[in-house]
Image: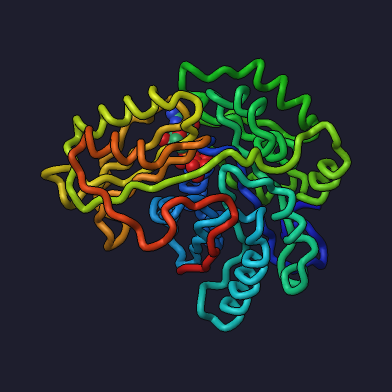
Length: 354
Ligand SMILES: Nc1nc2c(ncn2[C@@H]2O[C@H](COP(=O)(O)OP(=O)(O)OP(=O)(O)O)[C@@H](O)[C@H]2O)c(=O)[nH]1
């Protein structure tokens, strides 16, 4: 089965699950895709870990159908909320409250096991009547991917369930492709594999019938007993929030220090930072394990909130220690968040936002 245009008599709205481990390039791909005319009528659901969702701010979706499911992992205790969200999305579409989208893309958290998400799409009452699971797209980090596959069962399951595997970051000299490709072919020989740089991939692929659909991938995963299941369970996240502007050099130094001190226990940093002397233009920072991306000055803040917000995800991160080191390097006073600052997997509330 392939995209809606090719499924005779099936008028249900196709849903693509976009998954991949932390920092593998999902949002980069999504941003690129949503600029293309083929995906102009696409509703997007972004599921994020951490007490402060940022990805939805960074995706400049031309349509108004962009939703954030934050603070919990779709595959865990909050699965019912995905059902409610899809039902509500469909009702709002029927009532003309949101544009008449023709496709949905769900970007999972980097730690999601995609199987329960797909099972929800395929079986939940109120969902299967209106939506059908289409191709699963999995990003695999071309730099860290091999090691990540060995360390994290989530990453393996994301690969096994894929119809399309995208090996990202091919522009980086650190990209270690051949061994990783061999491993991916072992885990999922059926999936199509493409090499990608900076999210540059034509979304026409979703429509042309060349990909499988999620059903195949799911049955493959259910049959495959060699793939480890579930969450590794050691991962936590925390967020640093401050109203104090931060010196750029101090910020860059802190980034180098925190990534090297915590080594491979630190999986992900992303944040928007208000620099001293530049109140109108936030700096976007990203690190994936020890690879720090060049910080990027954005033209403007994506929302009215101009506080610096930095999300860190890792294994057993000591929040007090990280806050102390951040204060030491930047001098910034950190806020205590109203919501629980440590958003453990699946324990927080899920909500639907526009
Ligand atoms: N050089 C290079 N950098 C990339 C590429 N794809 C993603 N990145 C960078 O990798 C970092 C993480 O990319 P994202 O697209 O945010 O990854 P993600 O999978 O959405 O991350 P999470 O939502 O945290 O799981 C960012 O700094 C991106 O700019 C690529 O193909 N080449």
